Image 1: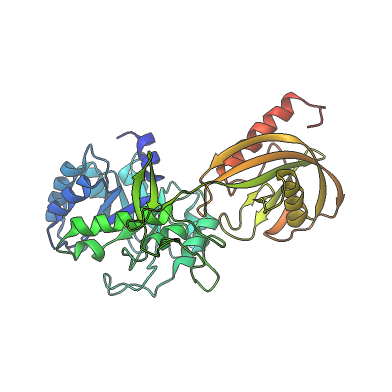
Image 2: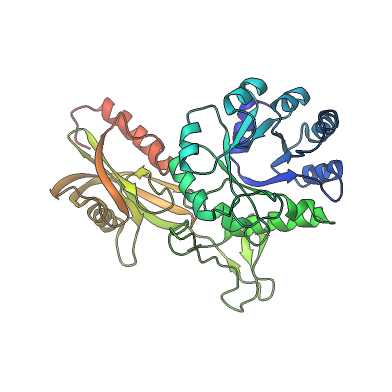
Length: 405
């Protein structure tokens, strides 16, 4: 498997199966995981002797090689390299991350456990592919586990280190796996929910279905978690017509939430939003987001179009609310559709504008507002689409020096 394909798979997200003393046996569970195309599988057996662990890792590698399932070995960079696994995961008390990277080489995935923003920030400049954090919920899998940190910890680390995927672990099952991913985790790691089951195939299917339902559901309110760790999502789980539980089904070429009782179909239509490119003295106006998605990161002034507003009115209002500046729109620059906002897919209309009044001060959904050089915007913007449109606009301005957009 190429480095590029591993990187693409790692950023796909979903289920991360940690295999520890499974009821059905290691090899059988590995075969089931591969058959169900579980994205990642980690072998974690802390008490197994080296010879047995090496042989078991080799046999699991034989099962996973060439499949859609990435194979990770826990705590043992040497064994990961010896069997040709896809990567290694090291815990807080395991191998040094820098030494682990040297042991497995540049082509294998390296995951590292972190307990908070400080450690994550410290490691973010190293060649680490993902952070593991937890326990998110109470767990009996590890008797020496720390107290649960809650989903808010995921959101905090994701905001501080937006370029590094997060694998959340600890007490995750079908009832809370979607909640875990909505908090900002790329992967949800499960152990006892599958390994302790006599029917792991059914358990994996239930978890996969729960993830799919979570991704399809429509949310209201801010994405993420309040400071007290309470989930402030309102997932659409029941039919608005007859109150039956919704299921995910293939309808007209797409996966949609449907009602098995009255056959009502939930169409996840994109919500209209605006983003505004405000340039002044060769500087670009950006605001730092106060809430998720992208809490703590910079982006263009942006927001949903309210009922009764035109896109132009929405753009002017959002700039005023988030930056304190009054602007006059000078044109529409671009438009795009994206599912970057986990609350709902959006279609965005991007305008250009010039400042005509007001005082620069953050407000509403923004904690800061500032002008940045077009050629050097901050790293790790809240939205990839904003990064792309800023880069394209910067190139356009360089090619048309002296023209007013």
